[in-house]
Length: 235
Image (tube, rainbow, N blue to C red):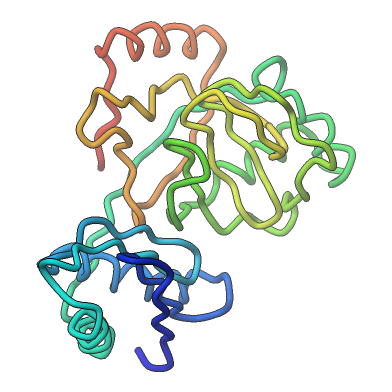
């Protein structure tokens, strides 16, 4: 992994640019370095993004120069850490009150609702990263046929579990928050719980496949999930 940029951005933070493009291949390199740096002595937190990382460290344990050298060494050791992504199947009820923008997707694509759902559930997506609110899962890449742009005006309030599309990305909201993604459905699974360790069961690099459920199934799973009686386990 050559050509990375390491930039100090504060008293104990370092920004690492690994590549410039947003792609699965670029993001794979981010994940490879992410899991290596998490094990480095003196590193307190590593936050992965599409093509970069933010690293927070303890300067009393490791100085910046030594840290920079370690990052460069680890980045050069491609293949040292073998990524073993897990795969999760996430239930989603599509359209209606759960996917209020489904009609918009139909209008923009010329597809029927069943076709949109079939395309969205036909792919196995990769988790690029988590953000911008707690538990928000960024997944890619979306089939070009349903890769619709974000809403021109974001909503003020979006229910947790809402599944949306924004260009080539899909994903879901872990908590209630504002947002501008095009909402096509909702998962009944509690995907972010601050009392759980870890709060989000999806990790960067994991695989996700959606499957369609009915409104009755949604209500049943949601009730169990809220009580802690429903768990999505990796295949």
